[in-house]
Structures are given as structure tokens and as C-alpha cells.
Image (cartoon, rainbow, N blue to C red; front, top):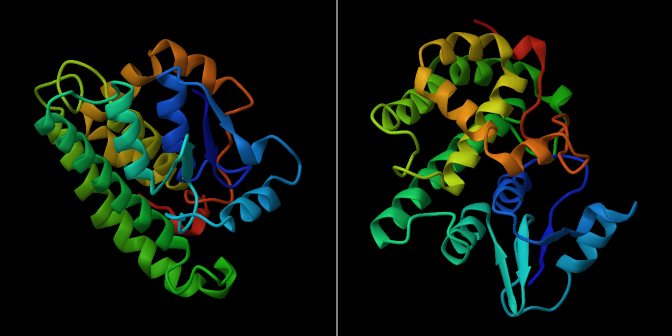
Length: 234
């Protein structure tokens, strides 16, 4: 079976969390909006299709008669079907819980540069963004990352002996935060050695090396994780 992944072309965004699971799990899929130059239009047209369970927004995954929306929900599905999470219910729920926590900080990272409204340009809310960024840097980033670092204090992976999709997502979160806030992340990561170890362990997973060097890996830019030097700091 080849899944159809639908997400905005040209940015990693929330779709990247799903891509990483598909790539590292070596699961066949099509990145549908990336296949043609009019990918965004194709995505919008596909979202307008009449469905019993329509997605609210990308990413969403088409799998036979299923259309699954929401990043954490997609990963819950892939984790169970393709052994990307523990098989016992306790382990599966734990990995899902971690993924939802990652989703929380992803929202906060986005809202740093769009604190008033997503429909406004960053330039229309720069004053508010500076205030939001200061709190996010000083309080929220360390709160989240120290939590994840603590989980890993006595184990190699978030769920124990083997990697799960949540480990891949945590890797991408760290990558994104370092792109957006390189100065602050240098300070915080120095105090989170277990996250540094996890990051290197994820990089060492063979399929990921191939993906990271391929054209399928979309660069950070005008997406969730954006680098504005005036929003960064020690």
C-alpha cells in the first residue's frame, strides 16, 4: 500500500513530523502536493472533496478509505500499523502523549512570530512578537526541553529500548528550534545532554541519513520555525 500524504509544498511544517516517520519506517508514500508545480492548488482542490470525515487542515494522510488528519493522530495510526511505537497499550499511549506535548510547543513556536493573528504578516505584529519571543526563549523553551531531557535521563529512547515516532519528532523539534533561535538554543541545549545524545542517535538511523541529503527534505524558511535575529537572544 502506498499512502498519500497531503501538506503544503516547499516547507517542512507539521507535515515533516509525518514524513520522518514514513521515511525512517521505509513506508511507501506519495508526497502529493510536491509532485507538480501547482501542488498548493492541488492540495486545496483535494481538501474540497466531499468526504464523510474531511480534514480541517493539512497534514492529512489518505489510506485506502481512511482520511486521517492531525499530525499526532496520523502518527498514532502509523505507529500502530507499522511498529513505530510500542505494541502494548501503555507504551502506545505514552508515545502519543509525548507527541501531543511536542505539538503544544510547536504551536507556541509558531505563535512567537504570529502572536496576534495567523492572517497578519509578521511585520504587522513585530512589537507583540518581541514580547512573546522573550517569554518563549526564557521560560517556555527550557521548560519543555528540560522535561524531555528528564524523560531520557535513564534510557536511550523516549519509550525505552527502541526508537519510536516520538523520537523522530523530538529530533525535528530540536532542529527547528535551533534554526529559529540559534543563540538561545546553544545555551539551553548545553544543559540538556540527553537531548544532544538523542539527536545524534536519531541521525544515525540509516534511512534518515539518506532522507536528510535528498531533495525530499524541505529547508526551514517561511514556515513554523522562522529565524528573525531580533527575536533570538541568549
